[in-house]
Structure formats: structure tokens, C-alpha cells
Amino acid sequence: MEKKKNPTAEIEEVLQEIGQKIEELVKKGAEAGADVKEDIEQKIKDLKENKTTLEGELQKAKELLKKEFKEKKEEMEPRLKESKGFFREGLRQLGLAFKAIFGKSSK
Image 1: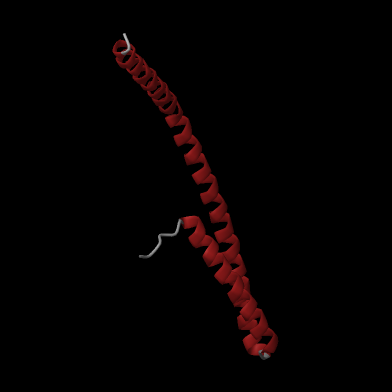
Image 2: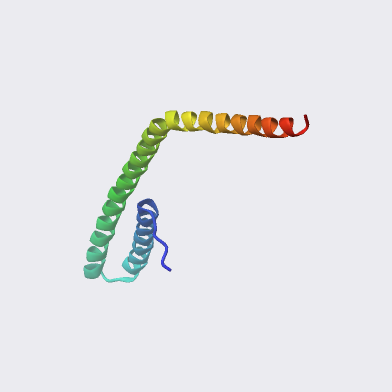
């Protein structure tokens, strides 16, 4: 089965690919002639700008996810506390039931 990647992981993977392409183009640029060199330098510049934009988007996505997580956590906190109280009360009642059952048997 194919694993689903989260958007952050996908963006990081794209950034790594862009970085590798930039390195390849730098190497090709050093070896290329003057005409081709200008074209490659322009591609390098474009890729660097694209990488910067993607890094900014990645940071915004991370901040948005943190904010949503915090909001959901704050929203669920009262329910969790209430459930915890119900769970404890259930255990207490269960303990009282055992005491009642076993207490009557020994009399």
C-alpha cells in the first residue's frame, strides 16, 4: 500500500529536489560555454527564487498546523476533563459494587 505523505513532508521533499537541481545546474554552468552559461544562470536564479517561496509557504503551513492543533486541543480540553471525571466515577462505582457484592457474601 502507498503511504500518504503530509503536505509538510511533500514540500520538504520538493525543496530537496530543487536544491539538487540547483547544484547540478551550477556544475553544468561551470562547464558550459558563454551562451549556455547565461541561460543556466537564469535557471539557477529562478530555482533559488522558487525555493525561497516554497520555504516561506512551508513555514506558513507549519504555523497554521500549530495554530489549528492548539485550537483543537483547547476545544477538546473541557471534554477530556469531563470524560476523565466520568471514568473515575465509573471506577469508584465499580469498586463500590464489588464491595457490596463481596461484603454481602461474607456476612
